[in-house]
Image (cartoon, rainbow, N blue to C red; front, side, top):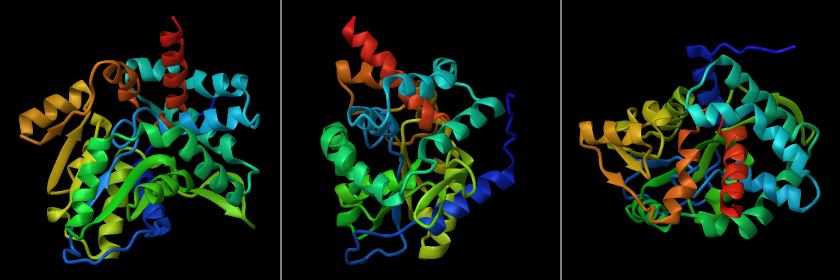
Amino acid sequence: MRRFWRRTETDHVSAGEVAAAAAEPHALRPEPDPTAAAFFDVDNTMMRGASIYYFARGLAARKLFTMRDLAMFAWGQALFRVRGTENAEHIGTAKEAALAFVAGQKVEDLVRLSEEIYDEVMADRIWHGTRALALQHLDAGQQVWLVTATPVEVARVIAHRLGLTGALGTVAETKDGVYTGRLVGNLLHGPAKAEAVRALAQREGLDLARCSAYSDSVNDLPMLGTVGHPHAVNPDSALREHAKANRWPVHDFRTGRKVTMVALPAAAGAGALAGGVAAGIALRRHYRA
């Protein structure tokens, strides 16, 4: 039976608070500027393409996730990504896909696989220009956090490998070190990202007016509008127009083929967890053709 999920303001606040509570700083540096921080989206902002797709592809290479699973995982979000719109049904589909993805798995196994797959598949897809922006904030003594709908364990590995402070991500419930198949809160998407940033700012004593945020997607306007210094990175057309109208800095590190590679994932929203897989499959077919 098809299930429909209604998002409410409470859902966003809950997901944001859960993500902030689960945030674990990794790279601590001297803090001459302890009240400022920078927040970076991951997919198409810090990394070319969708992180969860690369993770799923790594699992498929290890025979832990079949190509049929990959296709089924993507199918429910394919139409959503093409249209770039979202509704309660799409949110529910993405949520169920995310839960099915981790249910019954050991946390330590997911973390280990995330580390291996990052080194093998994701590292070469980091936008050097975006990482340079993050390093500028670190060099200024500011915290730098990733903010993503990707499972927080995967997001932490990315942050660790890049030498960043930590990551805010979707939090899955665990019991005795095993995922239960339920989320704590909700998907960290859209308004939930903004709530996570606010909750973390309160915990860390940050002045949001002095903080920066970076994203490629108009879906992240709530997060971008939360800080005093929003930036558009490899922006979709809607975000580019909004940034231009509001005189926000725009950073575009795409050239030639890279623009094509990120064009389809740019519409990602709450379906990033599942939709990134659809984009990856479509792009692979495109390049084979």
